[in-house]
Structure formats: C-alpha cells, structure tokens
Length: 543
Image (cartoon, rainbow, N blue to C red; front, side, top):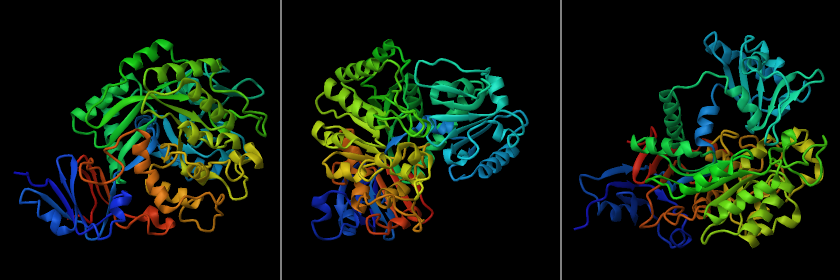
C-alpha cells in the first residue's frame, strides 16, 4: 500500500520549469511530496486523493510554486562572518559613509572594533581613499570597512596600529598595502593578503558565536526563498562546519561548496583537497575547486589586455601565472569542476585557454565567474568549449547612467560597450550555459532583485535610471538562470524543474515572477520555502 503524502500544497499555481508540463494544457494547482521527493503534480483533487489525516496540507491561496531557487555564486560562510556591522551598500557619498559609521560606533562597546561592508568606490571619487576620513566617525578607535567587491578594505589609523601595519609589504599574490607619498599606509588594503593582516588583529569570535552567525544566515537565505547555493569560499575546515550544521539540523540550505586556492596555497594543500573531493552529506557536497586569476576592475587588479585609464590592469593575480595553469591541470585531472574568478578580458581569455589545455572529467564542465568585460573573439568560445558563464547582474546596478562611475572610467568606452560589458544576453544567445547568482556579500542575495536586474540592466524600482544597454534577458530566461541553469551547472538532474521523482526543493511566491513587471519583483512576497520536503520558512500568509 502506498503511504500517504507528507506534504500537500493545494489551491496554488505551479510553474514546473519543465516545458513539456508547463505547456501541456490544463492547470497544475497542487503538488504532493512524500519524503524528500515530489510524487504528484496535478489539480487539487488529484493531490488530496493521496493525502490523509497525517499529511500537512497547505492552502496556498493562489500563490505560485517554483522549483527551488538556487544562487549560483555566493559566499555563505565568509559572507556571514564578514558582512557584519554597518550596511554601507546604499551609501553614495562620503557624508553617507561617515554618518553610517558614526551610527555603528554608537552601538558598539568602548573598545569594540567598528565594522562595515558594502563601501562604494565612487563615494571617494573626490577625496581619495583614506582611513583618516572615517577616523572621527569611528570615535578614533579601530574600524575596518570592506568595499562592495570584498577585494579592498579601509582601515582607520588605530586599526593599522593594532595590526602592526606601518608600511608596504610584499605578498605572494597581487595584493597591496597602499601608501602615500610619505610612505605611510593610507588605510586602503587591496586584496585578501593585505586585508587579512588587519582583520587578524580583531578579537576572535568564540566557536559558539561563529556557529550562531552561520546558522542565522542560513535562516535569512530561506526567508527569501533560496533553497540552494553554489558556495565560493570552502576550505578543509568547511567540511567540519557543514557536518556540524547538518548534524544539528541547521543545514536548511542545499550547498555545493568548493575548495578554494590562492597563489600562496601550497601544492601539498591541493593534494589534501583531492583526497576530499567526494565528501558529501544529505544536503551538501564538495567536488569543486575555486581559483582566482585576477582581482577587480575598480582597483586596477582586474587583468586586461590593455591598461586601464590609470595605467593599471596588466598583471594577473598570480605572480607566477604558470602556477595557475598547473592548478587548473591538477584539479581537472582529479575530476574537480573548476571555478575561476575572472573580471578582465585578459583574465577570461587565459582562463579559457587553461581549461582548453587541461580538459575536464566526463560529465564535468568548468566555469568562469563574473566576466565583466570580454574580447569579442572569446565570446563564442564558451559554447564551443563547453565552459559555463556564471554571471551576477546585480553588479551592473552600480554603473552610473552617464558612465561617471569608477568602473566605467577605468575601462573606457570600448571595453564597456554593449556585448562586451557584463555580456549576459550575448553569451546566452551564443548557446553558452549561463547561470545567475548574486556574489553576496558583494551584492544583496535577494534573488528577486537579481531577476529584475537581469531583465532591466538597471536597479529595479528606478525607472528614471537609464538601462545600461539592451542586453536584458526575458523574464523566463532570468528565472531559468536561478532554477534550471544552476542544476545543469553542477550536473544535478534531481533539481531545476518540478516533476515526479525530483527532489522537493520548492520556492513559493505570491505572484508568478515570469508574469509581473520586473520593477515589482523585489516586493513579490515569499510564502513558503521547502528543502527536501522540509518546510524551512513559512510566511505570515500561510495558515
């Protein structure tokens, strides 16, 4: 005898993202779940027929069921730990920054470090970047603020003093402690090697504090309807974190996590990563290697074919670029999917070359992240060579309509032209597999904002802002970028569409995101989030 359903969602609308089912005629209003799988799709009567008194029946009151939303590029653990303190993402001027830092200072204990994240480079366009500018707002104490891309930080003089940073240093990657004409540090710290010197001077979190921060962040992901993440910040220690979260029942988000390597990562560590490639749990797995081939355009650390307007951009992140190629060859030979951060056109070009030379294990497709500017000859290579383009449309929301922003000024008109800058639609139409994500904490993780940005090529809710270009996706394509495409990216045929036998990862929202105006997407309410048949978030409208 077939057991009853564990969960029945009725009186709704179901967008399966399966073309055969969504276009088959007749309305799918209900979905039934047994264990961790979808077992029935149909009308209310068909689903109720397989329920009994033990089944949790949820009246959706017309809400829309989607395959679980997956963010294809997010830093779940580093983000949770680093995106603390003042939220500076909406601070557009130096006055805004100083006001928010002062407000954060007022909430801190006397000796506590003032933290913040989301600094906009354009806020310092007139003043230049200096920790002195926020010292008074921070009460003269230690403060460390990270910029929007998390590749640069700003430290106050007191923070530098506590960290023992009093001049330039040499790093094994393309990192820098920026100094003034007098040889003294300005407080600007470029790339992780320099940033870590100061962040290490902060009081360490206890294990309990750290665990709570991570678990609470997973709850916030669930509250926005996110059921899965492609993480970007894994280490050997991440294995213990994932096991602990899952063992305690707190891993309410499905994760694919990488092992990441920097230029100074010893090759012996690569060997250790390889021994753990097959590590997995019920809701997480490894098997991905994350590399960086360059930095970011805004600070001149993005790798370009031709120098930017400041004369920067001609160096890769790796002083020994051959080591990057060796890393790609090693991880490809060990069966890993390789993820490479590449913002500049030269970085993208060389990553493609490295992948072509190394090859990939059967069923594995390597990825390139960001692709902020691209040489025209390299665009068709993604589809031809089977490389996945992982894009973050929210990054475009920082670009000013008149191109007066730092990113545009550095690259110039040619490299920011339609089809070369954030070329999401061009890549999509070329036949490349394009998947979408936020890059949180660089941008907000709300996928509804990501859907809107991918369509509008401007911030949602600001129709007065000129769209960057005509490269927007359709509403259905944008939703594919957060559902079917992420599943294809990691080769998981249990996810990405709703049909019997698939995993019951479900996101339920008030209105169909394919049908409502893109500017209205951020306010589309999340009704229910389900992971593997478990309700992990329940909105106020659900009985």
